[in-house]
Image 1 (spheres, one colour):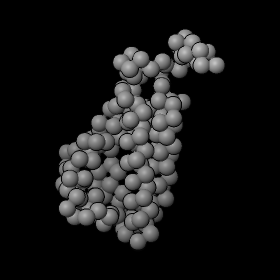
Image 2: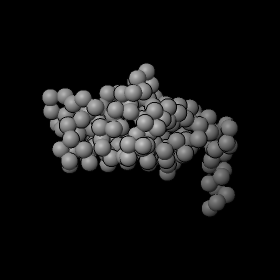
Image 3: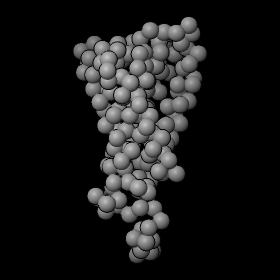
Length: 163
């Protein structure tokens, strides 16, 4: 389960960030469209967000600093859920901007809000799973940080000594 969670959330973050990276101004417009942040912080957040998404996604895909990546992922997803819910509650017609764009609404942008929130809540659940259980198979953490992989002999011996 942990490996699947890591790969799913990691791929989503890398794809989302990579789609925004070529047009950083669109990312800034997307952040601005939510009308939640003071204008002075909108450009830095808009420019940094794609880079942060790719960095978090890469860490999760590699299994490097998995718990930290999962915590940052969960925090970003909470922010996105709050942002989408806020836009919905205030009647704003914007695309979520999750995979680029975000400022120009479709025919009925609010129809997508429940699906966007559901997707982000699902990704949040996977991120929280990784916060709780960061040790996963095929993770760089297993070698670099000495984190025992699930089901490994070392993990079984560590558990046995605590009992």
